[in-house]
Image (tube, rainbow, N blue to C red; front, side, top):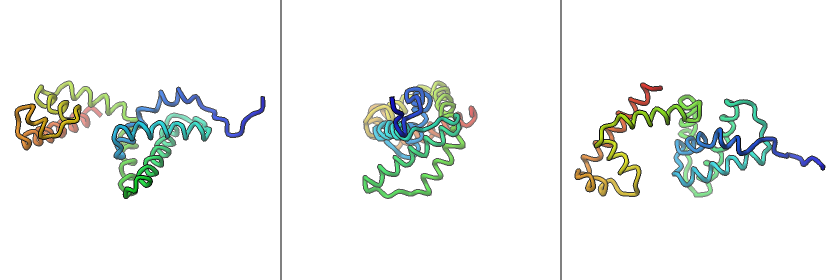
Length: 169
């Protein structure tokens, strides 16, 4: 059987299992909504597979996947006719690289632990606001709060979570 030029040399399933969550999180940091992050994550792995990527270790693989994902994101923004602040994208990538060497696993674990320690009211507010398609005004009404009260509670809760995560990392 003849050898096909540019034949992929990677196990796509294993690569995705190891890095899919990290690529998806990186795309979310760049500004993708969940649906676009899902699509671009798939595009990233297909592009890597088609290119016949050779795995050169964990760190280089993560870096390469970030480059491919970032390029897919930038292309999607250009195709949508949206202005791209490349400096902001580069800043976010630099911060992500410094904070999430493991694809965000440590940060996600720290967030889960910090969420468990929240009091009931702030946890309810987060779940209602971020876990539903409701507006802030609707969530405030459901929780028996004013819109400004919910806004303040969410801001304070996000700040508490940020401090808790930073302590754990």
